[in-house]
Length: 398
Image (tube, rainbow, N blue to C red; front, top):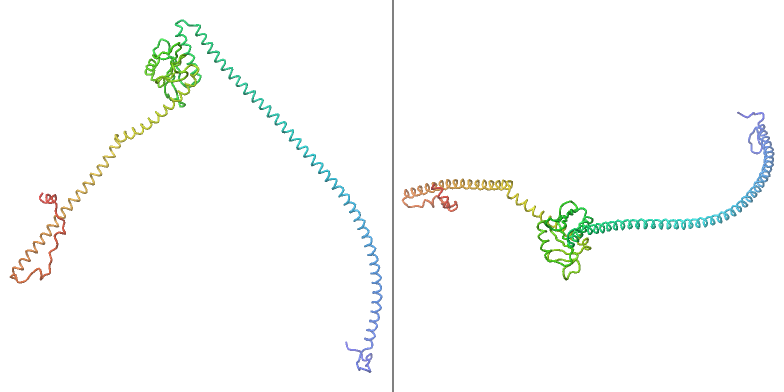
């Protein structure tokens, strides 16, 4: 907008032209602005002071509240420390009480276990004692039965005193063997039959007969050598491997179990031990025999195969193959002989023809030049050809 010329004034000093209205407006605005600024500044300062005072009061209140809160927290912290100390004391006391209760429980448990163990051991001991007492009672009953049987047999004697006593001993030996070896066959040789008193057939765990033990029972005042001779014959008749005489009287110089020639001699109270030893020996001998029989079985199998038709057929096949191979070689050899004979004939014909030709040429030349030298011909060495053997000459003749 262009300035109004009526309100325009020129400065006498600088010569600048300006609008009076604009300058007054600007001056008024400056003064008004200054007054307003001062008023606003005063109001703002007053308001700020009031706010600052109010804020100071609030801060003071907050500080006091914070102090109170800190004081309360310190009090609470103090109370907490006291509570912590009490808890620690209580924990220590509780720990001691727990350890004491645990130790008491352990002692109580040990005491109970020891008591139970003692009771168990006591019960086991009672059971074992009861078993032993039962076994002793059974043995005593068996002994009583044997004694009773012996007494019954002694009271029933109708024949000679020595024969009846021997029969009682025989029954005792038989019953002892039956009790010791229930798997074996224990047979009594009846009175009046020729032979020994008891025959024991020993069986292995597999039920196979391993051998026989023959027992002769004698109850006499004096020992007799004839018993040994008779028992040998009885063993032969019964096919027994081992012979035993159970006697109340032993040979001179023998105080306990021993051997007279090949016959074992013992007393009745030694029968269990002697029977165990002899039975074990019979089983061992049987095992060795079976092992030897198995070895013989292998040899017999080899011998049977070699002498059998299968081996014979195999050998015949081998021999036929060998004979066929030999015939083939012989045929080939004869063929080659014929070939050599034919080739030798060809060579001889060549040599004869060359010799005849050379003789003819020398005859025509009158002997003035050497034909062989002129034609540079050398006779091939006949030695390089195979020399005929006597049998080849025979073939040629044939």
